[in-house]
Picture (cartoon, helix red, strand yellow):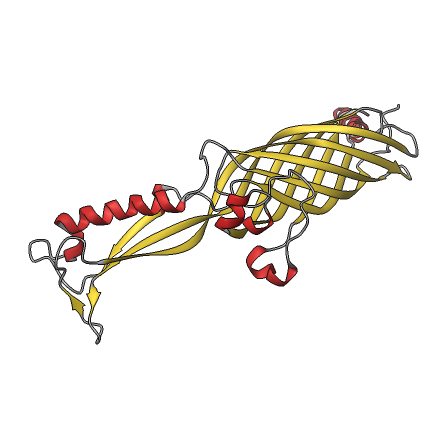
Length: 296
């Protein structure tokens, strides 16, 4: 008897679970663009830059996967995983000061977002087909390439490459070497879309996504002080410390001044103004996990 009751209870849970589920899995493809301190400032549909310079400027691309859990015909929770490549070039900007500056680059940005979606019409109901506009918003994380630098401090060299003792505290070279490193930041995604369901289980949709990020580094316009290091050539040593002469006394003080000069010269724009990354995309989803209706 107990086994029958247990089996009946598990079967009941299975039926309820099936009836309670409404899942969608799909893909999105589109174009992403950046609004920051470098390049153009229109929020969507930025035309791709010269394809001949794709190695420098990249290509505005978005590709991703999404999962929707539909609580009812109107309300949905959604998880997005995506890859963006964004490009930025001052040559394409409208502002003359940006064109004259001529900074450019690209960034590879990975994202994960959790969002709430609301359909204006019951597009997730039992009908064969339907169209509905929708709005969405949520929170997410981005992994992106951020600039790093090492300031290489070295002695003057003679024709044979032999280090020369400095004549004064300014008499040495400092050269910046740049690299990229991965960073993580939060973002706030929101937007609007249009969804068309057909053949019960399939849906296509188009949407515009806007992402307000909590960083000013997507366009590589800002080098943070914590991402700037210094190295010192040790061909000539300080006898009192056993380390590089350039890492002691007034030489070291000058190297720190040069670090600050590099930050002041390299950084562009207002650090309080954060970057936006936006996407226009098309997608296709398939519904599974239960009959495509919320009826009994």
